[in-house]
Image (cartoon, rainbow, N blue to C red; front, side, top):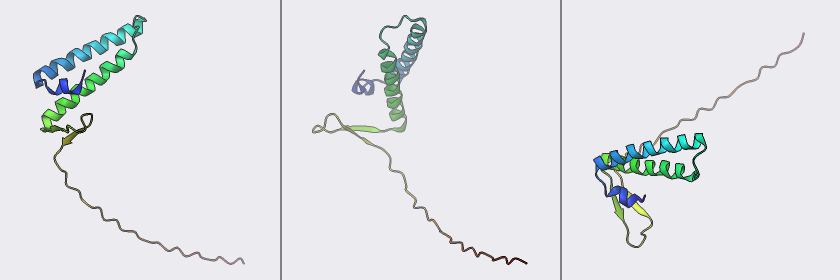
Amino acid sequence: MRIADVRAKTDEELKKEVLSLYKEEMNLRFEKANGQLKDTAKIRRVRRDIARVQTVITEHKLGLVVVSDKAKSSKKKVEAPKAKTVAKKTETKTKTTKKKKVEGK
């Protein structure tokens, strides 16, 4: 599953896709437990597909726009709302300790 294909889907289609991927993952786990699963890498692919779909759902909720650069087709830029940065002030206090000499009797 390619991310471009996922981004082309609507929110309702994405929700259905996530549900079907979760069901597929559960079935794969059962097959693995019973020793019937031959392609164990499929579990990993399904988990990553779930993550891709959930990422696109989150992008839709936040209103993020994906901008693709033709020169760099493999890398995509995401425009996110800029957050305010606050500089932290740190104060350092130096403690001086005095050692007391105890004289013996």
